[in-house]
Each structure stands twice: as C-alpha cells, then as structure tokens.
Amino acid sequence: MSSDNNNGDSALQQQQQTISLEELPLSQLQNIKNQLETEISGLTEAFTQMKQAQGAFRECKNCIEMLTPESQDKTIMVPLSNSLYVPGKISNIDSVVVDVGTGYYVEKSTADGLSYYDGKIEYVQGNLKKIQETMEQKQSSYRGLMEVMQFKISQQHQQQQQASTKQTA
Image 1 (cartoon, rainbow, N blue to C red):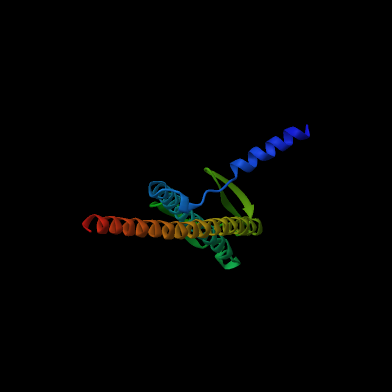
Image 2: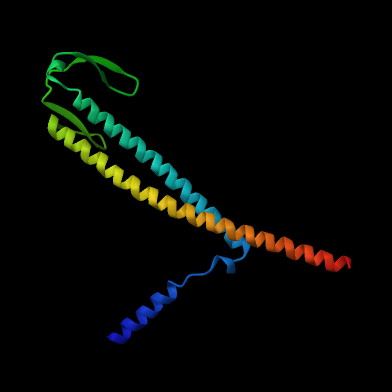
C-alpha cells in the first residue's frame, strides 16, 4: 500500500511543477495575459457588488437604529417597489421585518434585526478582504507577466535589428 502512496505522490509532484514564464512563447504569454485580465475584471466586479451589498446592509441597520420611542405613530413613506411608495405609520418600534433573501422576510425584534445586519456586514467584510487579497495577487502576477512580455518583445526587436544589420552588410 505504501508503494501506491509513493506513486500518487510522485504523480502529484509532476503535476505541480511550474513553468517559468521566460520559457513560454509570446503567444502563450498573451493568452495568460488575457486570462488574468478577465479574472481581474471579474474580481473587480465582484468587489463592487459586495461593496454595494455592504452599503445596503448598513443602510438597513441605520434605519433600524433610527427607530426610537419618538418614532411611534410617525408617518413615513413605505417602499412597495423601487419606484412606488405609499404613506404608512410606524405602529411598533419593538420589531422589524428583515429581508433574509430570495423574497423571504422574517419578523425580528429590533435588537435581533440589528444583530442580523451586523452579522451580514461582517460576513461581507470578510469576503471583501478575500477578494482584495486575490485581486492583489492577480495584479502582481499581471505586472510580472507584463515585464516578461516587454523583455521578450525587446529581445525580438534586437534580434530583428541584428538580422537586418547582417543582411545589409
């Protein structure tokens, strides 16, 4: 059984071998560059969406925090859709209705509502940090790739100049 593990380990080691960027032709480097650009763009979009979600959760939390005893029986505008509001009165400041996603709403105490949104904000913050770290790694890889590509292009130009100099001589 140990020989099977050794064979598995060596196969894994062979798969994990890295190839130096300097060894790849420009066409493959261009493909890697395009892939990195796509990944960075996707991460940037995900980061923006997460920031928007975090802002929405903060806004919900702020709305709950604004509920005070003085808010009781005050008239407010209640959103029915993005563009339709109707007047309503705050009848109970001790509980709130929380959007838990996919069209589901749950009634919670004000304290539980605040706790719920604190948890959501913290969760999104953790994801934002992970996305940021991944973006920084991809951007670093992209910069390194661009340096290698520029070096290879300058090498090609030098070789072409040397070849044309030899032909004219």
